[in-house]
Length: 240
Image 1 (cartoon, rainbow, N blue to C red):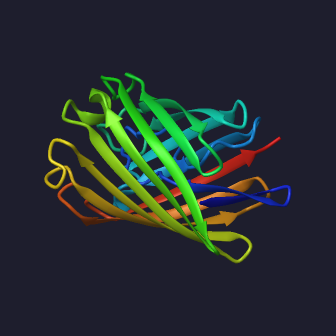
Image 2: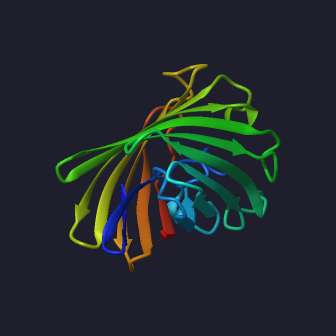
């Protein structure tokens, strides 16, 4: 989980920005359970799928979210394509959604891809989120189903498993090892299977601002990430 320091306390989140492409399937580029009522978050970053072509194969993301109360969070995320090559639109996609807290360690997430930009059809994703701590090591888990043509291309149901062990490194850094498994019910162990790895780190700039930087690597499967990528996101969080 990403760690923000606010008024001397630690709030936890975790990255989910890797391997989502121009149509991300969640509004939040981070695994984060709903914050306290009145919490506001703003992210801006870059997700690259080939390190050698940062100026031609990168998406720029802008996200904002707000907690209506201690259980419900609303958010929206725009993906921009001015660093994604000549064939990409300046505005690629818009995802809006909400999270509902089911307790201190569980949440349900629902996200809708709007039929705008490069997305001709709507997409729907539903996710169950969970986090657990063992001593100094924490681990975030998420299981997500991706529905409708905007997320599936009209084929089956997309499935996404996210596992992220993480540990604090001193007082200003947190290290993460993201494991991402993507597939589709049409051919679970075949053409749609991709397993990627995303080591990344948070660095606390001040009490409200964190910089996350990481790389993404394809590990196994026909649908794994083809080339190493790099990701960087500036995260601002303010709680009442």
